[in-house]
Length: 196
Length: 280
Image (cartoon, rainbow over all chains, first blue to last red; front, side, top):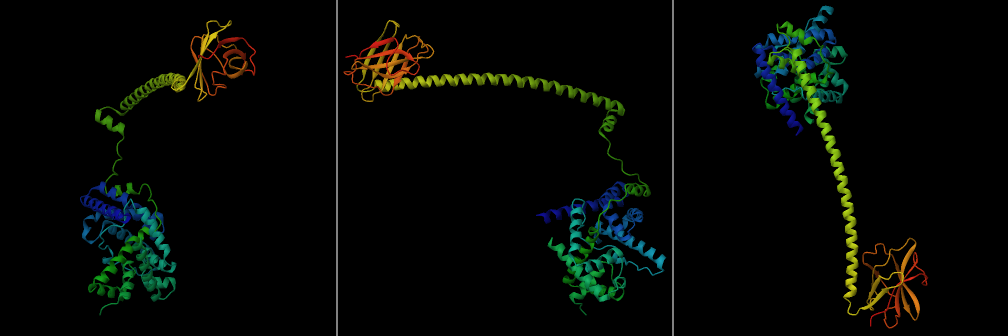
């Protein structure tokens, strides 16, 4: 029953996002304000977890929503939910910024985030104001349930924007070990999410 | 060449996390082009996990003015907060806000005064109802006492009837003596059950510390048949005697009633009030 209700809430949430996005495309600033209210906390937290600096995170949060406003017409609902689009946009911008600073400091080549990383099809948004906090707590619990060495490689990859070989170098472990831990960790997370 | 499931999971998990690069990335893209439904299902499941990862980090509220700055950058002011009631009323009536505020305050004052007056009326009403309830309660107690008296009277009459219905009853009349000339009495008894009814009239009220005592005179010896009290001489008084000491009228020389100390005495000591013999 609970799963059914959450599913309905998520569908309603996704539907509301799509309506807001449609209005943003027609330059409705009130819709952008409403979308900000729905996602600002999540996006700001995501950026902070990547950048680790709250002042830069605030600047980037602004950049993400301004970019969302300016590029709203490029949003394609057939390719994914608004949630997916905003999260992907925010994560890519945050990783770019970290890598840009790293490049300036260490004169290294920045790994380009491919176009197919922008966003992908997803039927429902996992995010909804009503259930977000509860789901967030459950997801943190899930991450705590998998072995720390597995959650570590997942965290570095997703929030650090590192490739598998970079992770291997950073942790000083074989590349094969990184691949195995990543696969096992993701499978376990998927299993925990399915069981809930 | 078809990719095996384990290898696909390995590539897929890295891909959805954005950690795939070089030859591995090419291999994954090739695999996706020929992926069957099972591999596509794995891809979608992995992608769901990755999309939930932002929810796994600790959540923070963005700075208060971040929204205002964004709205400013896109050339829009932040949507105004909803107008308060006073502002909306003032706008609707074409008045200024202080006037509307004073008006609302006056209306509220009237409401408070009205409610206070209503409260006083209610309190008075409650007091009146309490008094009525108290009176009704007293009346009910009196009625109940009256019912008890009536019930006792009924019980006496019922017992009298029982004795009178006996197939064989005996009767003795008693007449007033010197101290109570107008007094008289009757004793009706059932020899079988030995129960008797004493009826007396016009005997004076019993003084404090005294009782009337009924005697059965047998072989010139008075035997006590019980004590009783008369409170209201105007009324006839009935008294029940559960077990008469002697029931054979041949053996009863007379009945007598004397005034004795409270509770009675073994032998008569006071004045005789009534004396009578059994009827033949």
